[in-house]
Length: 210
Image (cartoon, rainbow, N blue to C red; front, side):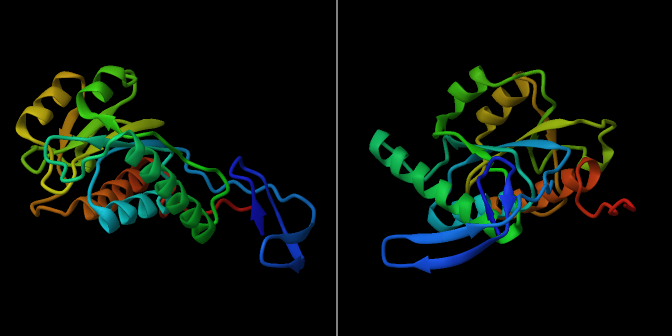
């Protein structure tokens, strides 16, 4: 099965392959929608190497719509313009691999890395937004809402600084907690996306009768 990242897929047979090229014979297009009805924009502090790759991979499998990598105060990763381009290309390969594994045929957007404050100033504020905060009084299940789009803000290893959380709240983010334990950033991504997809998306939903 081959797909173009824009929602189209079709079965294919390999007719020939070599070192530099592969020839496929395409079958009839198949209409398949595996996208969640909930559009999730994940803003994620950049972590080192495999942790960031794992977070992006699992976010794609859990139906994320858009990912914005953020350079925050506690980021241990520092990127100049050239390294940003290299890292972005790498993350795009991680996304494509995750799409192939989970069967999605839409390519989620991934932005070039943003400085935290620049992203706060530029983001779309009409969309419901939450920042993960272990000291927040409410969990996702306590939120009385039924959104079609959400923005989730998750810090890197080391979390967001107090001043970053305060600025996020001032710009419209509501603090929310995942439970009594402190989670690693890659675990927090999986847990938060699982929570919102279960509450408002398609995780665990029954398949309607044809």
